[in-house]
Image (cartoon, rainbow, N blue to C red):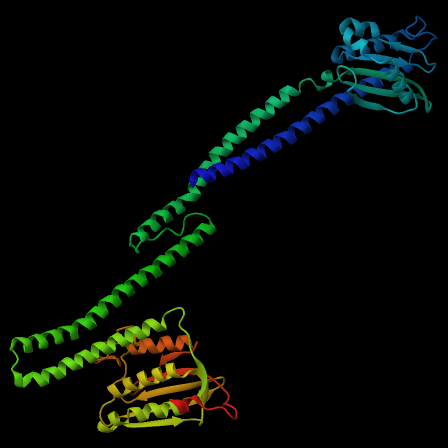
Length: 489
């Protein structure tokens, strides 16, 4: 991964450097050519000025201003030495002075390649008052041509024409190109080192995260990565990674605890059944005692069956494809039917049980069978922990768009230290409201059912006993011709 990132970054830097170097080269090249042409035009203007200062009737004749002529010759020689140029001067009378002999002696091929027609046409353009600077690619070698008019009293009175090989103007660009290549190479080397160090520093958290992920894959969920290293994005990723690790650790601990609890809950009845069955089979338990112990075996079998059923029910509820069968029904009728089913148990213990609806009927929209399961579990809990002669109340009331159902008892209540764990699986603390011979799954099942309904189930603060309250979506009563789902329970 490190090598791939380095390769991609260096390729991007290389492409950028090459593009910038090309732009730099073209820009410097054009600037140098323009600068040399500007210099050549400046020299041509000086020559034009000196030519205008000459007098007499013949070019380079003795009657001309000798000082001006000397300066003109020096200037022309200087241009010729620097550029190997052909120079022609036209005065106001149309007479031409040039350095063709000097130019021919230095570069005969260049002079022979000159075109009289091109020179004449260029001079005519200059004599019309236009300054020219052109690159010509005709012939064996390209050339640069500049032409400057000289003006006296607002009238074009002559011209200066200079033509030289293009390579004279463009010479020295190789040194610029070499400089650009060296600078680009240095930039690439320094950039490569900087990128290497930066990427290496940046990827350190990712390497640590990769190692941590390997540890997690091997079942070690205690690993953490440093959230302070790297940029903001990497710090956020590190925080998310640690959060994920914490959740995985909690899930794993929950799984282990769940397996341990199931094993413990199943071991007790299995041990009891095995012991009693083995004692009766081996004759340790006398025959006259068999009915008593067979009854104990049956009770333990029923307990184990209840645990398995609760586990299956919770497993079905926690499946992602678990669905509810929605209907509209009278929750007060459901509460009354739940009480009727348990009337024998409460009467035998002298427990007073009452339904206290605030409004009757109270229609809700929910899965009736699931809500009946919640009410039954809460009522069974209340009966189990209400002392003989105590009282249990089932109440309903409407608050806005929801109906609130409360199951309250006069039992020992729930200790403050157990309130946070009351809905945990297998929680059966001795002093908790779920203590006893239950499986500790009833309230977990109730909470999951309410989560599926997107409603709440909570333990209320009470001075006496315990009270559980859950909410349901309020619904309008079914119209004429419809039957209340509660009547089919």
